[in-house]
Every structure is written in C-alpha cells, then in structure tokens.
Image: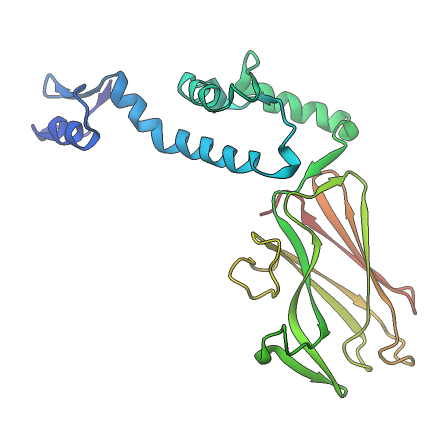
Length: 266
C-alpha cells in the first residue's frame, strides 16, 4: 500500500492509472490510499526488467560469450522474484541460472575476496573501446580533407582515434600493449597522449559522435631535440586490476610520465 501525498486525492486517479496500464487492480482505498494489485506492481517493473533482458541478449550475441553456459545473479535486484523469473524464462534453454542465498551481499563478499586475492581474476572482457589521439599520413581516398595538416612538408591526418583495445576483446591482468610514436614537430620538447573511449570499435576520429570526452592524458618531456622528429616515444599501456596504467617514455632522454585510467570507465 502506498499512502497518497494529497489530503484530497483526485477521485479518478485510480481509474486513469488503470486505463494507462490496461489493468483492473488499481484503486483508491478509503479515499486515502492508492492500492496496486499484483498485476499493477509487476507492470511497474516491466521497463527495467525488459531492458536488462534485452541488454543481456545483446551481450550473448558477441562471439566472446558464445560458450557461456551459466549465469550467476548477484546484487540487491537479483533477489527480485520478478527479475529472476524473467531471466530464467529468457535464458534457461541455453544457460543454467544460479542465484546464491543473500544475493544482495554477494557483491560485497566478492569485492572483499578480490581485495585479498586480486589475481583470482585472470582476464576481463572489455566493455568499451579505448584509444588515444594521434596523427598518420594523410590518404585522400580515406581521410576527411578538413583534417589534412601539413607539418614540416608532410601531409598528415589529425584527430586519429588510435585504438589500444577494442570492445569485447579479452585482456589478461598484467597484459601490456606498446606503441612507438614520434614528435609531431622537430623542436617539440613534450609529447602528449590524450585518451578516449568509444562505443564504436571502428571509430576513425576522436571527434566522432561515438567517441566520448577525453578520460585522461599523459605528457612526457623530451628535452633533447638534436634528432628532430627522429625520436622514439614509447607508450606502454598496462592492464592492471581495476585501472589502466599508461606510461610514456622518451627513449632519447629516459624521461617518462604516467597516468591512470579507470578500467571500468565507459
């Protein structure tokens, strides 16, 4: 029972609600309480439950999850019988659905175990695509002419989304990815790497609509300009426990800089 906030509830409130839900178990009781029957209560959960089921079906369409045979429901909402029934109905033909006792505190228990033994998780499937801004040689057959940039006599394309790891890729805890880049200008004394995420693993530019705002940057000093552009800057991306560690190293001087990115960021 939900008590009406109004001291003079509108008499046709229940009727309007019933009509909008196409249900018959919504009524005003004693001119003071709004009473919702089982069908009406279940109807309130439909949008979120249907959204969860739809999202899970989308996840199961990914090749990396084709061999999943068991679903483990945890968290406070996992204790909802309505959600449990919806998940079982949608996936029982392909997966075994397990619901532990006290599912609401299972997440806390798991977090505690993870803190004590972080390497119990060996790998993760990326929920989004990570990359950084860069420049490559301009190709008129592929690149947007408005992004063409002439630097020291060379035609380059700016705003390139340089992919580090793609959505649905599996990365091991402790895995490292290395990239070698060079300064844009001969007299540049710093190198800057801006990091982004994208909902499209095939995004080309950091300004695409599927690419979000920058989630971090690393700036490394490169004081020795005697080699001009012929200086290697190594970007090492390390996948740790719940963060991504990015370190840029100027191979000429040995200078380095590090930043951390949220591993769970989308």
